[in-house]
Image (cartoon, rainbow, N blue to C red; front, top):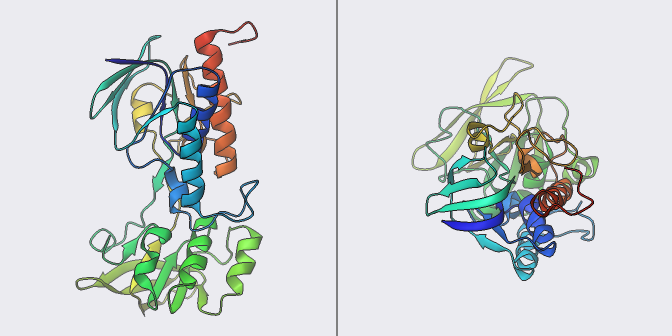
Length: 311
């Protein structure tokens, strides 16, 4: 069994920030990531609201954070999935699909996963025209017809990115107004090959070997129509990766987000949470970094008990 002072679960913006601050504080720090380090930042075609970068590709920003984190001595282990936890005693046990670890404190920075529409054809055509990541799969749809589903920042950013590649982009939103930042909405309106389909819900995704059309329902008129498309990019929100935390005894809210106080404490001693997995109302890279920083410094206080630490 390997022993560490602090183990952080998740290598997105929150986890990487926690790693930087915990290592600089002197803690022996390990980050476990079930995928590749970078989190959902990697999926962002462009980020224009992170201080210090007027505009930066999400993958590039993630790589910069990973390099910074490793440079201060953090061990990041990718493609290693946490499968169970025992957090009730002072010695926290973290079991992965590869080995078992012991730590004095744990930070959950496990982020979120993409929500699905739950309509016929979605699962069947995933990877064959249905996607949840514009930057990953957008280049496959150059000069093709694309439908983007959603009305928030992620949906608009995806539509803007795809519009530079596809011949035409339809944005389907079930309401009559978008809930994205005004700057993004203005940019979208300037795209001549983008059309917004208001009050429209996707009811089915169809095709043979790949996607060829989508069935759309107008919730104002009650009419259904078919739209010929080559790809469907679904951006309707995220849900927290908090199931393991909940099973281990960490309190979550009714939506499954880990409940934290202003210092990122959970209900369990020595257990903290940061980033999109928490019940903080703002899900942005900037807030994730701030929460990760706070969680790391609180964990340092808990572990090392400096004279100023109040518990």
